[in-house]
Amino acid sequence: MKIRTLTLATGVLAAALVLAGCSTTGDTGMEGMDHGSSTSPADDSSNAEFNDADVNFAMGMAVHHEQAIEMSETLLAKDGVDERVAALAEDIKAAQAPEIQTMNTWLEEWGADTEMGGMDHGGMMSEDDMAALEQATGPEASSLFLEQMIEHHEGAIQMAQDELDTGTNADALDLAQKIVDDQNAEITEMQQLLDTL
Image (cartoon, rainbow, N blue to C red; front, top):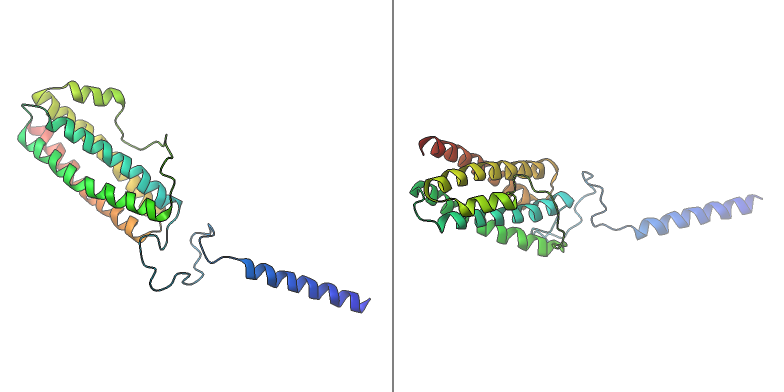
């Protein structure tokens, strides 16, 4: 009886050791637990550490930025637009185009499924909103663009704040903070412009 108990205990211990040896050092979905460095010193690229929040941020913000650029291009194609508003639209395009490129590069490095559609991104303009901007002319277009872009920026800031609260990737967190800072400043500028149109 003692021999059988000893054999059983030895078997359980061996099974436990085998299972422990099968565990991975990669992303186990246990965010917030520090098990030591699981990456080599050479692995310091943007995909060194990321979670679902980082992927959702990059995917959602790239789409959000694309619409901001589309709105800016719609405005810039018009005659009679306030030159200060046109300059702001140019600035938005210049700032957001490289950020889209950066986020798409991360998604590729992370092996993210970029075909995920139907996600609700805060502040996005509807088809009717975009049509209204398309049809507006001159001063009306300038005012409408500012009103829509303020709402659009507020949505982006909320998305960026969500990333700051739940993301883990250092590069994505840095970009989220930049978006919060830049777009808050632009909202202030747009509100001031609206008051003078």
